[in-house]
Each structure stands twice: as C-alpha cells, then as structure tokens.
Image (cartoon, one colour):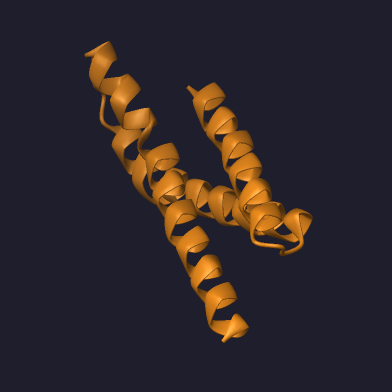
Length: 95
C-alpha cells in the first residue's frame, strides 16, 4: 500500500518541477515545496485518520485497501491546493 503513496509523491515532485520550469520559477524549489507539502499531509493523515481506522478489525480486504489509500488521496489534494497557491502568488507578483 505504501508503494502507491511513494509513487504519488514522486509524481507530485515531477509535476511541481515541470510547473515551476514552465512558469520561469526555480524548478527545484517548486519540487521541494510540492514534495514537502505532500509528505506532511500524508504523514498527518496517516497518523490522525489511518491510525484510528486501522484499530478497527476490518476483514474485507477491498475495504482495507481503500482505507489505507486515504492518506495518499488527501496528500494529492493538498498538493493540488499548494500548486494553485504557488501559481496564484506567481501571477500576482508579475503584476
């Protein structure tokens, strides 16, 4: 299950890198911001949501798979909002 979280983290880093490069911003800085935002959100969701949910003994493997993906989904959503904020601040600084 953690493999998908790592894959999404790498894809987020690439996505932020390419966005920063396209906008003429420092791409490494953007990639680091995206990755840090992703992993902090993933870690908090894992600690605060998945921890208590995993205490419940669920026998349905499909449901367990879906529940374990919650931190990764929330982290991707956070990355989308972080990217939008960075793009908006870049556009505002150009004016």
